[in-house]
Image (cartoon, rainbow, N blue to C red):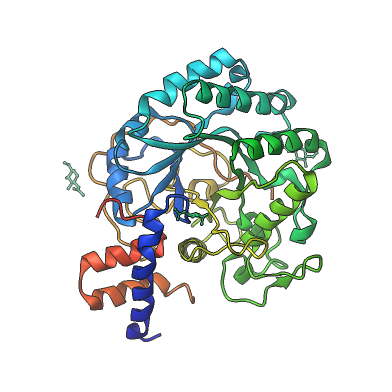
Length: 410
Ligand SMILES: *[C@@H]1O[C@H](CO)[C@@H](O)[C@H](O)[C@H]1NC(C)=O
Ligand SMILES: *[C@@H]1O[C@H](CO)[C@@H](O)[C@H](O)[C@H]1NC(C)=O
Ligand SMILES: *[C@@H]1O[C@H](CO)[C@@H](O)[C@H](O)[C@H]1NC(C)=O
């Protein structure tokens, strides 16, 4: 594509950016700030890294006070996590109140905390004690927030693995595991009553890795392809992530209780490297997946079942995390290496993370659990186009717009 043919597109992006900036609930890319590593830069350095990208939403797996303090007055919106091991404890309302007072209250309102996830992928973990504690714990945390007058500011939810579904294809046949329904249905009622979203961690990568002969790469990487028609709904799907999200929507409708509950993607991503037997874990595929994903989110695209509702997505993850157990891919989901350099060339503005690489104690953290535009040139073409325009500032604006991001720092 000729460079100048991109100029109208750039202007289009410039034109749409103010609307995303003024609406905090509109689509914007978020990022998972996992810290299962001993070599990550300081939170202050992370702010400098995220600033040129304009990332407006960050998800943490805990309530790391160093991070929450550092992001005060940045406007960045946080989802924070209450770790699994505390879930049974915060069933007790007094313990929940103490937790909220100690971990959230001191940071509000200077750090924006929009939601707490109570546990991560609890239901698919098959720990029955934990499963039984989940909703009572969420209720106690919600009551604690209400006691402090914070329940309208801070939503209470939990993140699920796609393994909570027994059927995910075709999307219209999406259904929760029958054994989980006694937990899922009341949980959905809670989310509906409190106006909180249903969060799903969805990794088309796992489907591809498990069956690379039948799952087509273009379909999982948001590349142009024929797509597949859902015989139940007649809707055409041209990427797997949308199909997975709509399977969750169908499952919620079938379970009942989830009236008006928004479905959001709390994790998705693609590893840039893996073990020899991990088909598809390459920098090229990661670049396509994450690049196309970010563009789709920036465009405010919804899924076929809900085309008018921009899909909220948190990319997994900010950094490659060196202490994650499991296959090599687990340590290669980052957009960035710990030194702040890009894990692969996304073509976006690359700011050094700075030099304060104080080691971070490993804390919290989850990530992928296997349940199951001609993009290569896309960013590089855009960046050469902006070079032609000749102003670094313009390129930052363009990139921020592309990522659907809020220019809070410019
Ligand atoms: C913000 O965006 C959401 C979702 O697109 C929409 O429902 C809402 O009306 C918007 N609010 C404003 C103030 O524009
Ligand atoms: C939990 O149980 C389901 C259904 O029996 C099974 O498919 C799944 O692999 C189990 N998950 C874990 C993490 O053990
Ligand atoms: C970081 O600090 C070290 C030691 O002070 C210095 O040698 C190096 O050049 C610095 N790197 C950057 C990117 O500033």
